Length: 232
Picture 1 (cartoon, one colour):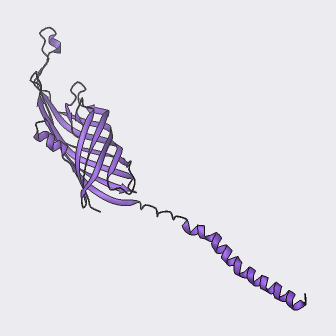
Picture 2 (cartoon, one colour):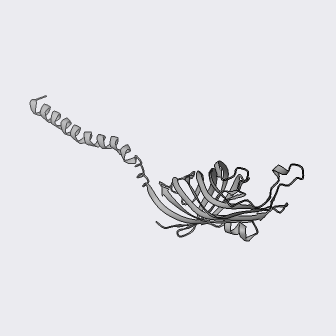
Picture 3 (cartoon, one colour):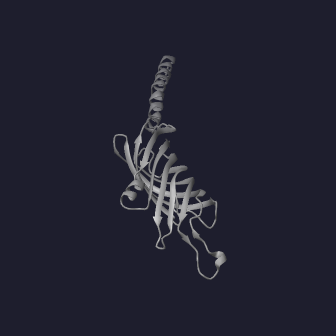
């Protein structure tokens, strides 16, 4: 074999190497094209909702002895966390079987807390759990007290004590749903378990029957039925 043939053989193999090497690299790179890109992160702020509770008005219309109405403001963070502020007014008036008159004047209450959405972040409907801290200051009356027993005169009391004032703090654990009706309108309800943290009254023997925002003093459960509008 002469030098010319050797040179041509070497040159042909070298050119073949340069041609096949890029093709081999492209074949190896093809699987990279199938890698799924991660979705962009969910923006922090997802909207602001205003709402009102219809349950208090509805229950009063059907004959309860107390009336409440409230408005609420919900912020949507990442479609997962919902800081909440609820503010409202409430009053009550009843007469017991022994003709004891119990009344709470219209009083302001506030509840602040957080809801946690348990569904997928892309869903426009929510199933949530949450908590609230509530507080209210108000005035109330207890009338027609009759403690006469005919045996211990020093313990007798018949009449109406002066108007009382109270400040109550409590907590609530809740679960509920919120669903989109049409456009920016939503509806939902919640079931709440309530527990009082503290009750400050003028006379510890004369505690209030009805607490604005909480309900009757011996109540541990509550329900809300809300309508919401997404304003942003």
